[in-house]
Length: 509
Ligand code: FAD
Ligand code: SF4
Image (cartoon, rainbow, N blue to C red; front, side, top):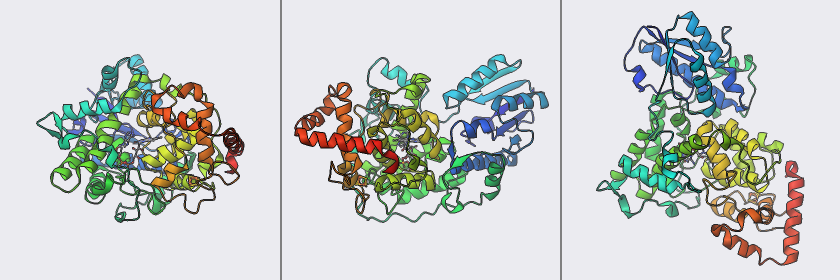
């Protein structure tokens, strides 16, 4: 019986049980299609990275003796749609059975489900064998609770999977979470290790993407494109991180600096999200580093929490709440993104740095995404849908299952507080404490009003004034409202006037 197996661009796991043995009756297909390049405007490096990794994976499978039908983006027979190409392949190879791995994105899941329902041949959806948890696990845990606390999910995962435990049930070190130890600014030392990630010659692939007419943004410069394109390179990157990054990861997890765009972050999200790496092996390696005395507990726990906790948790939120989740807009924000989101040209140093490096490397680390870019978009009342589309396009690791809950939920509070117990917003004080961005900025980090006042300051207070009815009952914000209510009337007026000016002139900031 001839079987066709579809491998999506984020399913590049050579250890999947599909590949344990070769079978001449099984044909694997990977396709570069406009359907996937065009559903949102993407960063050039994201398109190059996924296609280059798919090509590498196809070569690897062929070298192992598997039959592979690869469809490049500029192939004349490519019909540029997943299902149209599948139709052609099913006829061409007289396929009698079709299989796919469960997609992580709702839109692809629906498309393949619907497709299979009308197929005249048998079909089967297989597990992607990647995640710790099942799609519905978070929904089962939280049920109808108004707030879905990550911490609760995370502790359950630690126990269930025996991670960083004593006697199989108590957290090592007597604490589940060392978040409070992970909030230091980086003074310039310890030094960040040199970037040893390999460069790739991606000129041929880039030419075929351009020739096919695919639109993109961000730099495609070969010097800036250093993402791992297969499992072997991803494993090297994991080892380099464990050796040089993990020991400092905890302390400087929230730090930001113009002197280092990655600091001690792992840059593993692309390899994880395309499934070159399995989260278990990354978590196990970090735990081993701690147990061997190579990394402090706070660092290992902080890193593991991101993967075993946040990553699995946001996926659970996504599957529980889609498709409605994408439409949430709790504050009714509607402003468009200013043009500098696509150029990085703003006088606000923090945003110029965070957006600038996003355009250069298709990467910003968590605090830049949350407390600089997301902080600003929320304070300025930019439309969450537009913010979501920008994040989904710009980052090398952006796939909707992980990007959407982080952007709409954690960062924009657009779900009204399902994920976050309060909006993640701050004035310049936080950015100044955690970074060196404010030094030399055109704007005055201390001032709340006046032409040179940092836009974050007036917008911060104006945000709480504008949304008082939605936020002032939140116990975690009682201090904010107490402080706000202490302002003299003249000060309040100056703040709202400054906020108004900022909002009228977003493109010119
Ligand atoms: P590290 O800081 O080294 O962390 C290690 C790993 O933990 C990451 O590789 C990632 O797999 C995981 N992780 C860390 N934080 C999160 C989180 N909040 N949710 C899920 N996994 C997490 N992550 C994505 O993978 N894709 C996205 O599209 C994405 N969009 C985001 C949008 C916003 C607004 C915010 C605030 C965060 C977003 N994140 C996203 C989470 C996080 O910023 C990235 O995972 C991280 O910056 C990737 O860099 P790294 O590999 O160096 O991570
Ligand atoms: Fe950003 Fe304001 Fe600091 Fe400038 S002063 S870097 S705009 S926080």
